[in-house]
Amino acid sequence: MLERLREQLAEREAQHTRRRLRISMGPCQPQLQVARAELQGGDELAPQASETKALLAFCSNDYLGLANHPELINAWAEGARLYGVGSGASHLISGHSAAHAQLESELGHMQAPFIPGARALYFSTGYMANLAVLTALGSSDATLFCDKLNHASLIDGALLAAAKVQRYPNADMERLAYQLQQCTTPLKLIVTDAVFSMDGSVAPLRELLRLAEAHDAWVVVDDAHGFGVLGERGQGSLAYCGVGGERFIYMGTLGKAAGVAGAFVAAHPVIIEWLINAGRSYIYTTASSPAQAHALLTSLRLIQSEEGVARRAHLGALIQRLRSSPDSPWAQRGWRWAESITAIQPLMVGDNASTLALSAQLEQQGLWVPAIRPPTVPIGTARLRITLSASHTAADVDQLLAALANAAMGAM
Image (cartoon, rainbow, N blue to C red; front, top):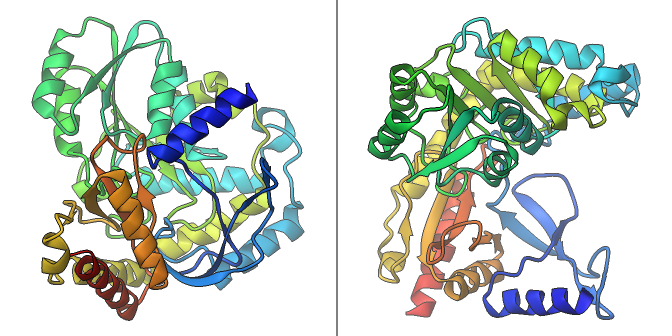
């Protein structure tokens, strides 16, 4: 087996698709000390490299800059004093603390304006939340209609479900309508990212709801990259698109804009009760730290506060600054911005080798901007996935733009 795996790793190396770890030496923030995890002595992975370099990072999902917020650090410490460090058991045994219950109550209230009577259920990760939703609801008498650009966790959840699965081209409402019309199963679930994680585009949620109502279907929305960022008070993509209704099953993550970790599902109380009883990735795992849940209560308050409003406004200004800059140097190289109004701003390059080379050129100029390659994105669409945070400054964005121009001119 080891020899076979070595050969497969070598193949990925030749195709420029092999991944390697980087080690961040401090808290999540734009200015980082970064080391590369080196392979030493054949197969042994060193815990950290001997040298680090200072990099300006455009690669975290800490969209509001809360991951290193002093109030969250204090809240976590307070939670540890109140509840200890670990939960000690699964939620359904003895691991469901008062902090978890309070967090779920607050999350339910936050989504209730868009999902009437919403109840929320907290998960350790967004991956586990998506697995629970699709496997618990995707029974043998159901069909899952999945956008082709959905996140890997939704893809895996669909593969594990007993339901039939049909995929439709990204945001192609005409194709989806045809598939729904032809469907004969009693239960229909439309499954989509709200903000597509590698493109930054927003799903047509209003049109999806219209189709769901016309064909008696439900809409599963993964709002990992919209919660906390979109909407006047950071409620997410449903608020941003001005839609709502009982047919939505909403998943939001709490390790991105919320700055901590975990995820939640908000839906009709009966659906939540079913997930508690049938969601295997909820039932059969130890509950996350109650101190973490306690810290998230502060995060939700910050997201909805005037400080949260100001952070979203600053983030919006940075997005505008990035997109409104002259792009002729890199446009001549065939690089182009993807159509995105969100904090995810992909620069489309094309082939794997050129994208890796561009990422390396930026690193030489002191910037950390990762190259995203297949199988994460389709072949021929390798890109730099630039992510902006409210912790960035206008000068940081200008430094990135200058570095891109330098890289483009150097390659011409």
